[in-house]
Length: 372
Image 1 (cartoon, rainbow, N blue to C red):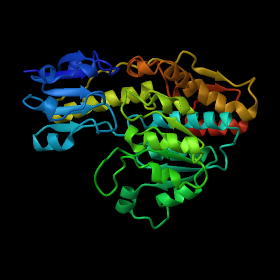
Image 2 (tube, rainbow, N blue to C red):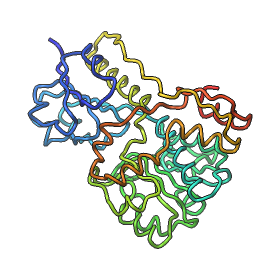
Image 3 (cartoon, one colour):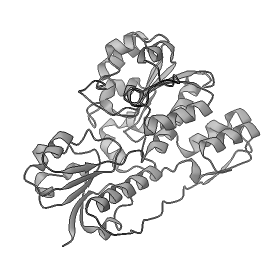
């Protein structure tokens, strides 16, 4: 008997591959219902639908594979207590989010006329994504402060790698969040950047949220922007998606529809990891054939006519520039879900070859992952 699988129709590189594992039906994520999943053995999902008692009760579902790094769309307590296994794809889009953060930092630097080199960035959450962001920021010449209480408790801090959140609030010019969204427990992150947090930052920092919407408080961000407690915001993850705060949208320097991790490379990796989770759970002896990731439209970046000091920015923006998506979302905020579901091809740095780079820029670009 074949395994019955229901998969989100908008997960790329899945169709034609998942069929090697079982009998597959595809639906848009917002059309997953109890009736639709009732007879399925496994689900391959994104974050569009919440999977808890209201949809899982009385179904045959044994496994939920999420092609995402997060799991706040899964009621893990309910699943654990009802024999439903759940798996995510940790780290699948870490490089993609780093690309987004790097491109956004360069946008902020150009818009507000400052140099990234020498600026201090506080990274709150140093897991798969935060670690990649740390490496990229150091390559950009930034001073980096790391805060991750769960890691600090587990690993210790004899080398002083981690700092208290208070130090970040006092010293950071930019604060970027890369934690999971948790509402309970010792290190809950819901509304971590709330009114109290933003009222006590010392250097009027930029705030970046490319993690989960609820980590930053919409109302607090707007108030902090109005009174000048913070310099600006970059928001990819919003509270109440897709019904996002239009006022905050208008105020944001960069505003994107939860796509920081949406590179084709990251999506391909998430799909592969989801199918590996499925294969492992059902003990399947399958070596699937995967679809190749399409090449970028313009894979060669010629820097011969670009000033040396602008070459790194030009190359990064050639791969991805969040301003395009910001303008589109601000113009049509009601299309938030559509933008996510119809996301164009975005490749990461290794898919591009750089030519005629000045020595200093070439070194930095090579470190970031470009082919030279």
